Image (cartoon, rainbow, N blue to C red):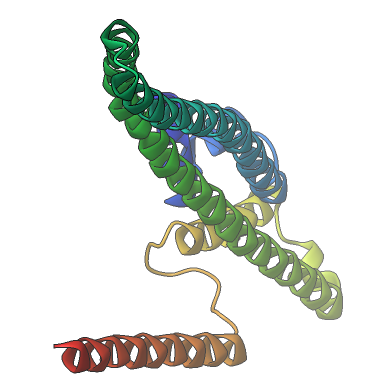
Length: 227
């Protein structure tokens, strides 16, 4: 994958909204956050395109490797037959061809292995971007609810709320967005996580840990029995 795209994915997953914010700083916080989510979508599409190319190359390398290996095996049978028939000239020609194939096989195997590693890496990037998008969408929903609550509180306050200056309202919006931004970038502060969701996530992590421990223990027991 291109180095620029890798850097972009890492920036998005790590929560770097700064570039998007700087480019449209005159827009509302909600607009900035929505644009950041769209940027994640665009990056995901790019990574998917990269993955499609890797999968195509992997298929071609696999096909070529299979054909080359099969031909090498066929030549071996033909060499044995030629030797039995006393046709050393034919055997020598087949051996020469085998040698050509043998220097290609390691390269093809390496190409398949490299494509496999690239495939896993790209799939990991896609999963990370998708997870980040879900987090960002949740934060955007929290921000919208907070804004709705603020509007409701202002309406309930009556005429007194109307005396707030435009500058004061802008500062409140910026402060709210700063809290959301800090939360999405992993910095202290931000919109509080829903308590019920946090409890469920903690329970899920604990369950996953117990499952890994059980699998590791079962593998150790199996290895001990084999020895």
